[in-house]
Structure formats: C-alpha cells, structure tokens
Amino acid sequence: MTAERAEASVAKVLSDTGERPWRSSDLHGGDEYSATYEDLTHALGDFLDRLAEARPDTELIESMTESLAGWARELGPLAVRERDRVFGRRTDLASRGQTMSPTIELAEISDDSASGTVYFGSYFLGGNGAVHGGAIPLMFDEILGRLANASGRPPQRTAYLHTDYRSITPVGRTLGVRAWLCSEDGRKRILRATIHDGETLCAEAEGLFVALKPGQP
Ligand SMILES: CCCCC/C=C\C/C=C\C/C=C\C/C=C\CCCC(=O)SCCNC(=O)CCNC(=O)[C@H](O)C(C)(C)COP(=O)(O)OP(=O)(O)OC[C@H]1O[C@@H](n2cnc3c(N)ncnc32)[C@H](O)[C@@H]1OP(=O)(O)O
Image 1: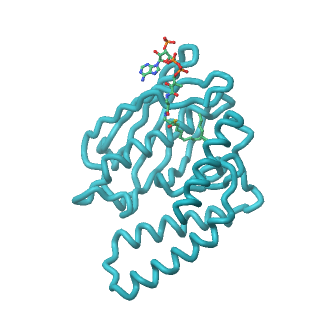
Image 2: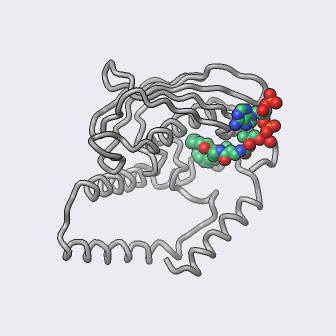
C-alpha cells in the first residue's frame, strides 16, 4: 500500500468513526461468505505460525514477498468503511474472523461466564517456549470483551485490564481458558479470566468494562 493510500484509508476510518457510533447491529457482517472467511483467517494464522518457525532461503523470501505484495495490491482498492468490514466482526465465528488474537474455542457459554480452550501458535512466541507477555492480555481482552458485550448488554470498552503472570504460558499446547462476570455497578462491570495448562495456572486477569453512553465512540 502506498503512503497516500494508507493515509486515505486512515482518514476514511476516522471519518467513519465520527460519522456514527458503533452499533451491535453492525456485527455478523459478511454472513454471505459462510465458512470461507473463517477458512481464510485459519490459513492466514497457519501461514504466520509457519513463517515464525521457518528459516527460508533468499529465493523463497523474495518469492513470498512478491506474492504478499500482489495480494496487498489486489485488496487495496477493495477497502470499505469500518462498519462494512468482515475482519474481526464475525461474532458468529470462534476466530471472530481475525488473526490478531489466537482463536478461542468456547465449549460452554452462559450470560455471565464462558470456558473453553485456546492455542497460541509459534506466531505468539515471546521466548524459550513461552507466549509473548503482550499476547496474553490481548487474549484476555478478547474473551472478556466478548463476554462483556454479550447477552444483549450495551457496547462496552475496557477501562483497565490487569494481568498476573503466574507461570509461563506455553506455545503450541491446547490450554484451558475461563472467563466470568464478577460484579455489576451501573455502567461498570468487573470480569475475571484465567488460562490453565492442565492443573497449572499460567495467568489470570481482571478487567473493568464501562458501558458506553449514547454517541460515545
Ligand atoms: C465497545 C466497542 C467495541 C467495538 C468492537 C467492534 C467490533 C468487535 C466485535 C465484537 C465485540 C466482541 C468482542 C470485542 C473484543 C474485544 C473488545 C475489546 C474492547 C476494548 O479493548 S476497547 C479499547 C480499549 N479501551 C479504550 O480505548 C477505552 C478508553 N477509555 C474510554 O473510552 C473511557 O475512559 C471509558 C469509556 C472507559 C470511561 O469514560 P467515561 O467518560 O464514559 O466514564 P467515566 O470516566 O465517568 O467512568 C465511568 C466509571 O468508571 C470508572 N472508571 C473509568 N476508568 C477507570 C479505570 N481505569 N479504573 C478504575 N475506574 C475507572 C470511573 O471512576 C467511573 O466510576 P463511577 O461512576 O463510580 O464514578
């Protein structure tokens, strides 16, 4: 993407945000793609894991760079307003149609709790087999944010997110994840979440979510 196009794209997002506040009815965008968009995000996530693990030769690096630049050229002119996008807005999919955070597979969901599994691939490696310390709160924000915004509750934003790292969170293992609503007080909700590797507590978090006032971005 050229600098001009990137600037135009950012301006478009900003004007879109100013144009109208977020509404829950904007989500599930892209149902017409059914499973194909999820396949795309899985393929992209798999590519990032394989890229993180590999030591490719110069020829392959050049070839991949050209292929990726080709996809960017193809997608560039297809940019749409934030509310018309698909990436990250497929709340019907486990991945939410995005690759920024690892996919959380939820086995049990109620109005005030959720539990399931999460798998951090090599893309999320910090070092020595442990997940990067920034990817863990990212995952917590994802599961807590989804729970806070679920069950017909008004749109909410994270006001704080406190993470305690209790033992390393290993890359390349299926881990248990749990989130629950602790308390509600007017616009404020406190939620907590944990990640376990078997019996071992890897990390835990507490987040304050504040319901947005009408028109608040
Ligand atoms: C909600 C939009 C989401 C959009 C997503 C769209 C599509 C996504 C698809 C599906 C969604 C599903 C999953 C989403 C996944 C992840 C969601 C992540 C959500 C985020 O990741 S979002 C980004 C990070 N987030 C921010 O970018 C927030 C910046 N910030 C603000 O926007 C304001 O700061 C705000 C609104 C938080 C409050 O501002 P405000 O003016 O409305 O209200 P005020 O300040 O009066 O606070 C009211 C009461 O909360 C207390 N309070 C406030 N902050 C506190 C703190 N830090 N510690 C302790 N108490 C605090 C006050 O003390 C007062 O308490 P009291 O009433 O008792 O006096």
